[in-house]
Length: 403
Image 1 (cartoon, rainbow, N blue to C red):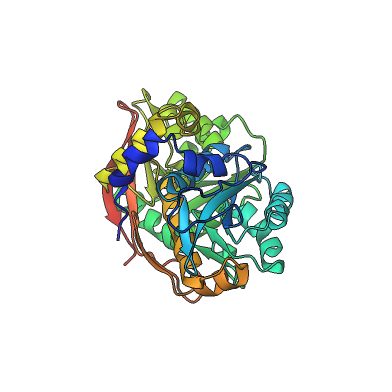
Image 2 (image 1 turned 120 degrees about the vertical axis):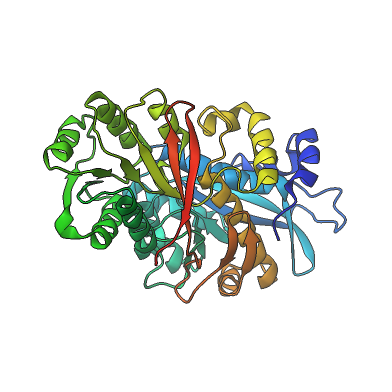
């Protein structure tokens, strides 16, 4: 069942998140000693969960919001009973810097820290790059919003709680057609597993003959040529599932050049970075697919906003306001899935946690989470949202699946 967040919130805020935050804000900080718990947990009764997320680089903004959801989960429930003993949960952080080469060393950091399970990452490329490190060391990983099918394909250690691109691409293609689009401009970043993969699934579902596809290189800051190309090719929808940094630049150029067609993107654009970039630009129209719509669980939303506003660092990491991102909600659900696996395993040994994950069934804020034979959550719906360029908020449009 969904967590009764509000019952915990007053206590969490009153204590200043001492039980959770003290063990999760510094990888070198000593774990909480568990004094005062009914089970008599000691400093030895600590279970470490790795947080494999980008805190910097192109995807730093998304990684921070995903991490906030994990941290909020810790604040709500900082302990877990494993095999009849209460353990304090410690979060161990490793910044993969949004880079595939850095992802490997970040993963090795978590292995060395002795984590029982890993959460992350925001960004499919870094998740794929680090996969063998986790697999070779027998550590299970739970992807939060990494949607590329290659993350879980061909291995037994990587799971994920989100839908995947082979589902999201057709959802976006169907939605584009519902807007009356007959020719689509598709723009991806060269070498980026997420954007290239999602564009491919979109084009396959939309009809490749009716798509014009381009890629842009790393470091691109001027997207005016791509906007011009979309207009010159006679397209009537602009699809670009990029990082938030590239997205903000695309939005600026689309507004400056009066793009004249709806912009569609996937879950990476579900961010207040995008909403802020689009606010006041009333000549553009932006739609995204995502995992959660603010207002879907008012009790959770209100408690999460209070927690965000209670700490300046949290507020900054959320982009400077208290908007509830689907990334954070998914991070929260992933944290509790990890706790469910630890409880079911009755052990902190990674191999036991990995074996238990296959049978986990958890009713999260984003719905029921159960894993199929590949390790993917069974998801058949996505939220479609539109950016309100006047208010700088996201407006709910529809819940959509693939027929």
